[in-house]
Length: 72
Image (cartoon, rainbow, N blue to C red; front, side, top):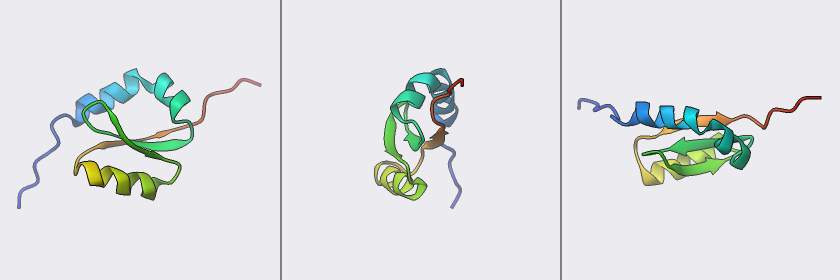
């Protein structure tokens, strides 16, 4: 079976980059799954996030939201 690429993947990756600061605050230190410019799963555990995202879609973009930057 030929694998069909997720066409909107690059759009979701761009969406993460353009919304990173807001996502970083809301999902600090979490893994998130994005599908069609929407967070479909989020968890501190990669496996939990991945399992939840797979219930919604076979295709999604994953990002790790590193905690908010702090200057000491």
